[in-house]
Length: 146
Image 1 (cartoon, rainbow, N blue to C red):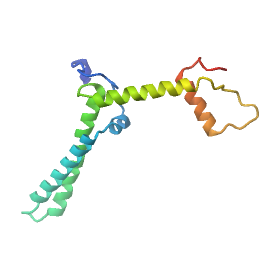
Image 2: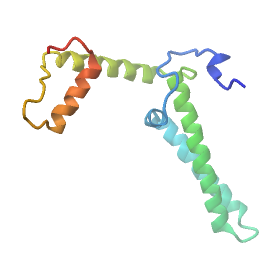
Image 3: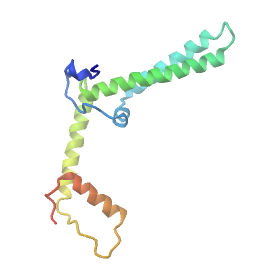
Image 4: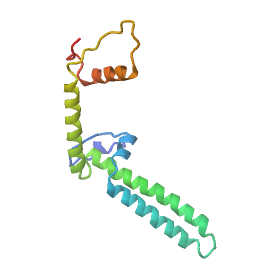
């Protein structure tokens, strides 16, 4: 069974990440996503409290409602964030941020082009140097002096 939504529906907005990982999707939560998340949680806590008044189990009922609200609110925010990254929901802010990030990455890589990556000659490489060299290799391989 094909569960890939992109096989049947094409995105209407620019695609930033066709298959965003969990960390990118959560990092992309907007202020509105957090507001919706907190609103759903707050409403669920209230409903849980009110539904527990008659049988006198307000505390456990409120906690259960809160847990349901946290999970539901998180899933709703996650769905909206992933939908914007995949181009299924309006994503003007993400496109602007994505282009700015891409420009910064290109400028950063271009600024490092003059570095010379030298082999270790009896010296111990520092973590900073090693991290920079690995990063430079990811920018544009073959265009570094060396």
